[in-house]
Length: 252
Ligand SMILES: Cc1ncc(COP(=O)(O)O)c(C=O)c1O
Image (cartoon, rainbow, N blue to C red):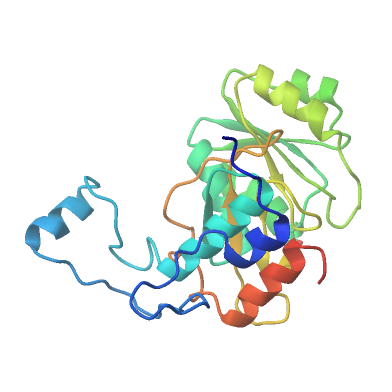
């Protein structure tokens, strides 16, 4: 029997959460812990050797953040997510995991200032070369791809220009070249990288970001460490969870 697809409202409330088996708490608990208890030395050794999945240290994983990652990925049709301390951390984490010294990225030049600075000044210091394209038409982007190009990058709605690229066409160019199209979705939704500071938690002071994977036309690879060290500035507050619910269902 085919599983019934859950509505966005249900996903926004429940996706990614397994209710606490001890207390039955309906709300997602906020795990304000940096460390975790290991059952014994063998358990610890297995966790650190990645032979067994489990919590090791909050900079790497936190059960509250895990729910947020799974919930947003479920809402957006992604296969996974990584919550970071800020949108810039998500962008750095995603791009620098895909491209390294000697690699190249093709990017729209219509970028948020922090991303422009990262690509224009910081990445060259790390040996990552970025070609900026003012009008990222599929033909021009295709022509800019080199043998060492590792990703194509754009924003759903360029900040501050407000332009919108042809994502389906760009995704085809990227996928034909065997590389991911990375999209910063801060100004809109339903793609891969986003500043959750602005889209989800703009009313609270702690910045956060999220990189999620495998949208039909945009994909982002990620690993478990953000550029600023922690997966998120703090475990996500109930207020932020409510904001996620509201913004994900379009009622914000
Ligand atoms: C389009 C865009 N991307 C990324 C960011 C960075 O987000 P954060 O401030 O959470 O690092 C911003 C912030 O203004 C933005 O507008």
